[in-house]
Amino acid sequence: MRVPIRKSGQYTHAKPDRHITKGKLQEFKEELGRLKRIHQPRAISEVKRLAEMGDFSENAAYQIAKGRLRGINERMLQLEDAVKKAIVIKPGSHTDLIQIGHHVTIVIAGEQKKYLILGSTETDPEKGIISHTSPLGKSLIGKKVGDTFTIKLANKEVECKILHIE
Figure (spheres, rainbow, N blue to C red):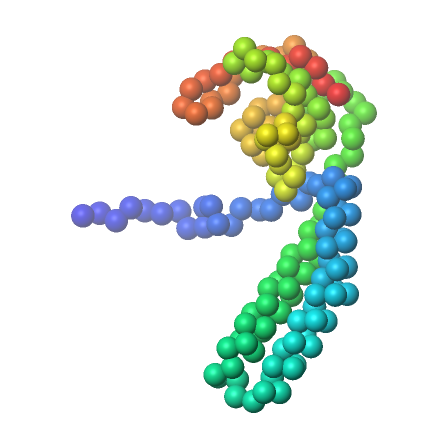
């Protein structure tokens, strides 16, 4: 029996999407501030308090508190990295070609729909917010009003037409 050949890291090492709106950047900064001012100091004092109880190997509460502190520190590192490397999406003034940040009205499979194209951290398909890295988002970027294209969705090809860009 042959073992399948795997492409190491093909799905686990994807580059993070750095495109975010001003509002999302502000949310990240506020969460980071809350973690630094409130949650991290509380977790540190809890770890210190539990460490004073003695034996670390059998102190389950201490181990849990240390894990909680590690989680807070990890989240702070993620947020600091996201804030530092963020690419802020500016509302597009040029609406001749579809870009990140544009509202797009299209006819897809005979049904008219409106989408906002943002980064992958802010997607909400039920509200019409799609990622520029999604199959539909990738297909829309760079297109103009009147363009038609075919996209493969759920194992079938669907015809789309761009009606309006804002």
